[in-house]
Length: 215
Image (cartoon, rainbow, N blue to C red; front, side, top):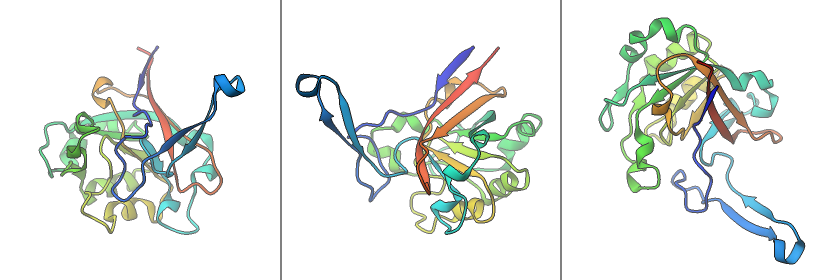
């Protein structure tokens, strides 16, 4: 069995969505003073590699803590979109190329290669993003979730979050952003797990996302 970590490490100087405060990791107890180490962590719910729930945008919608645990595990498929240039869109041709595999996947993860910019100003640039047609396909085919290795599902200039709203308005689907190392997984079906921190009425939460390959 091979396990590939698809998660960025949370740190005080990590990239965060514009307008969001960076996380704070404060020593609450120390070996020297208390005989053990404990850290006080302060951060926004959509920090780092994280998951969005429908309740992120819509009141009275599903929160992450209300989902059964099996929502967060399923067959995953990486779709390679790393040939796209800045600002180009992930259209249905990428899904059509691997349609037979997509039909067996519950999580569709788009590999753009943008995680190579993690920690630089370029990470907030004109990253590739999906078309409305792709979003509609995910809805109609009852996928559990979509994931990308960029900071947002929508282009960073879209303050209306058009694609988020399309996916989350009437559907129990989750969105995973800021994934890492998708290029290390390959193009076959694998077991994908992204387990969010379980807190009350969670609109979103950091996840530890992994790919599990058995062959």
